[in-house]
Image (cartoon, rainbow, N blue to C red):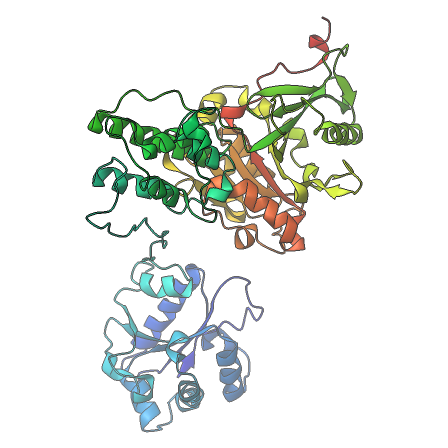
Length: 582
């Protein structure tokens, strides 16, 4: 028996499976079987497998028993080649002509078979074109154990074996999806709320599993379904139960009396919800809004309902602050700063209306400026509404691409009595207006976002992950991305990530995820895709904030999210010297 292993390369080649091939020389075939095994070894090595055999090792004196034991123990896999001589030498304990290798090697293999119930995952049985499964010794199992048939000594002939060695399976199980909406069957006398069964069946998958607590304005939509604000009906409207989903609230409305010819309360509720979702900040919300608008329209036509009134103006649940920094063309260390707040519309916080011009700031001064704006946020009138100021949810930094590696999320500010880490207190994201101002990047950017709001962030084409190997062909990938409306998210799991996020910007990708820093040609100690699986793009701002709060320190302080929503773009002229003359 011989073990395939290359003594000329004693050092293990990183990332390549190491394989020993155990076989027996046939004494009467003129070395034909030996030549076939040697050719198999060559094919495996050409295909990235560190196959080892005793030919090169025999060029120097060896203690063959010790050599075989060491090589077997160091292997990732042991490949056993079926042949009549192999079975004969093992079971009859005959001494092989070229040495005593077969019985010695069989002793090590049989010990592993006896001690390891899954031995067949490491000891692989291979049958060449002229071999037979009957030529394996009995301790290596019978016909029920996997064997690899190699009909031709080529890469294609060894494909099944190579796929297993390289952990590159042909057949992959599809991703397990989320639970569909499965509402219980209604009773015959169950209140319908003025709707047919089809309407309820179509509404369920839209509203099921949407927690009411996530959208603070949803209770306003519930009460509006009883009547417009100020009416007697609205005043008598009950408060809905907490800790339910929106579909449960819709079903609760079916319990109330419905006057024939009037608009069903469920339809009014969906009509108000549609307005709230359609005005939402996230693309996932706007997708729900479109689905509800379509549902309301179809139900109204089918039931011949009267014209619906204009939906209520629901108070926004969150506000967003955007700090825009435009490069001073005369000084790379200075920027022209704007600060805006967005609730129902845009309102400028800096520069003030009575200011002679924008502030020219360094990055340190920009941090101080943002701190000032956060202190003033709760002042009357800042939100631009007459209501209680909504909660500040997100802070955006609209910056040139030269600042995309700056750790804005790690800024420590003191808007109140205590110092806070910005990225742990708020969703901190980046935007890059300059990247949308050339060629057809603006079209790509907008069309991808439209695709996201229609298909949803969980679509299997929404996200592309880039590893180290992908970064070497980032430019080619950019050309491929420009031919389609997806991906909408490019996530880079290797550092330095510059090639990846720059290619994504060029292709008009609106969502980009990566890690800052890292030495050249290295991988971060913790792979981003292992700690932040992107199952739904629309959830990324919240997921990144959670990672910064509670994630692995090796990645939490370096993760960057570019979230450039064209539906809420800050459409203002770049502030440079040329625009300050007025």
